[in-house]
Image 1: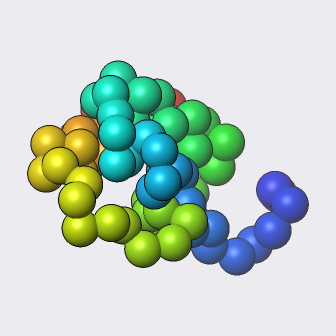
Image 2 (image 1 turned 180 degrees about the horizontal axis):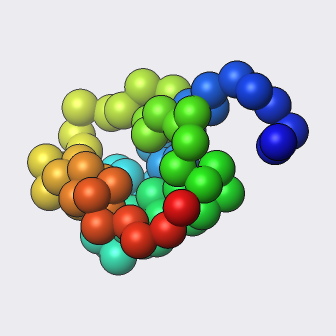
Length: 72
């Protein structure tokens, strides 16, 4: 068993990576979070709210990264 039996929220930096990119960095952050949790009891999200200026392509990249992860 891991360090907790609770679900975890996080995975992307809302101030830098999601806001400014590049897409490759967004995918890398999402995949790193999934690797750390094994994809179990994990909610992908920012540490805080997502700024309204975030390009839609960056949000779609995070969504796509979830479906392309090959771990766990």
